[in-house]
Length: 412
Image 1 (cartoon, rainbow, N blue to C red):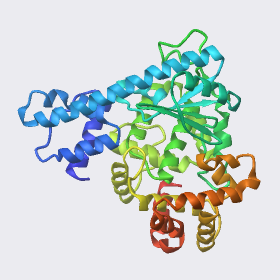
Image 2: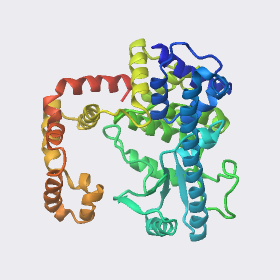
Image 3: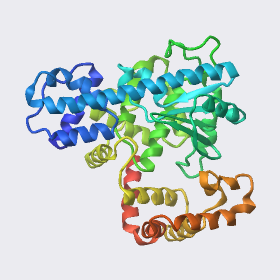
C-alpha cells in the first residue's frame, strides 16, 4: 500500500471511529487525494476529517478552500435531493402508492453523520401497476423523464435524479440462479421506517426492507458491481455502518443461509474480511482471511475504481465479456463466438430494456426494425471503438482470462 493510499484509509478509519484526523504526512499528494475522494463520493468526509487541522494553517490555505468548496457543493446537492424525496413521500402517500427507497436515501441514516453520505440519485421500488401514478408525481415535481425501459424510469432536473424501479435487482450473477425473482420478494420483507425518518407523513406509504433481507441485498448489489465495472470504498462503508447500527436486528443465521441460497456466501466471506483488514472492524461473517495477493489486488482496484467502477472503456468491455462468459456454461471459444454474433444482432430481451429500442417491448416481431435502427444510430458513434468492443471476446482472450481469475478469487 502506498503512503497516499495508507493516508486515505487513515481518514476513513478515523471517520468510522468518530474522531478527527489530526496529522497530515508531509509528502501527501493533495491532487491525488482530492481526486480519489471526489471519485469515491467522500468530499464531505474529507472536509469533516481535516477541517480543524487545515482551516487555520496558511500552508494549506488553497487546499482548504478547494476542499470546502467541494463540501458545500455536496451539501447543497444532498439537501436538494432530500427535500425532493420528502415531496415524493408526501405525494405518494396521498395517492396510496406504497414504495421502498433503496441505497443512499436509506443507508445515509445509518451513517454517523447522514449528510456525509453523498447520493448520486434517488432509487425507489414501486409496483408495476403504480408506474404511471409515480410518473404523474414526477411531472408535478417538474422532473422530466430522461429514460425509460421495461424495469426503470429515470427522471432528472439537476442536481436531483429519481429512478423508479419495478424490480429491486436485475443482474444475473450466478449461472442457474434467478436473483431478480429472489429480490422481487422484498415486498414480503418490509417494515415501517419511523425510526429512520422523523418527517414522515401521517399514514405514510414508505416502507424499508427488514435488516436481514436488506443486508443480503447490499451484498448482492456490491457483488453485481464487482462483477461488472467494479465498485469503490463507499459501498464497504455503507455495510460497515449498517451492521454497526442494525446489528441487533440482523438474524445472522438467516443471513448466512440466504447468502448460500443466492450463491454469494463465498463472496461475502471475502467482502467481510476486506472490511476487517481495511477498517479494523469485526464483521460477524469474517471467517476466512483472504490471501495477501488478493488483498493487494482488491485494495488497488477498489481505490482505482471510484464509486461506480473504473473510468476505462477497455476494462469495462473486459468486465462485460467476462460476466457473459461465466454465465454461459459453455466452452470459452463457443461463448466468445456467440457473444460476437449477439453483439451484432442483440436479442429481444437485450434491446427491449434500452430506451432507444423499448418500442419493441411486448412486440418481439419488431426486433429486425430495432436492429436496423441500431445500425443507423451507430453510424454517428465511435465506429472503431464499437467494432473493437464487439470483437473483444475473440481478440482479447488473455485479458478476459485474467479478469476471470480475479472474479474466481472473489468467489464469483
